[in-house]
Image (cartoon, rainbow, N blue to C red; front, side, top):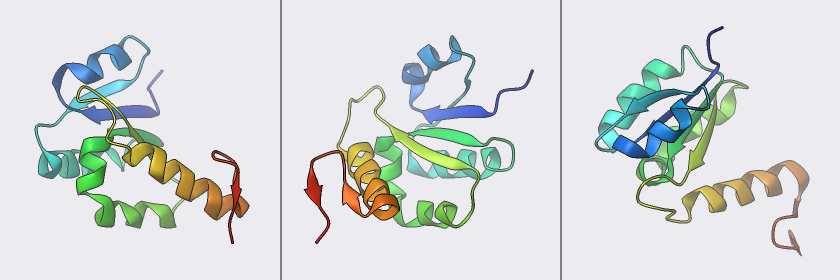
Length: 108
């Protein structure tokens, strides 16, 4: 059975996901991550991407919000979190619900 989930990240950080059945792709920088993501967007429904790359590609990634698939999920990887994944999750929850359920503050 083919996986509907992929991860794009730097080197060894993605290897743990392979054990969980996630297709893995490595990228050395944001530009190579962008090219890989462009190819993966045609094949996968959920694509996890290192938040280091996502932060650099923020404006370009907004195009994926227009369609149901693929869902792009920023995740902390080898370098640790830079806060981007948490910030984007918070924004999307507020957009969907009108309330910040993660931090307990209402949108005003």
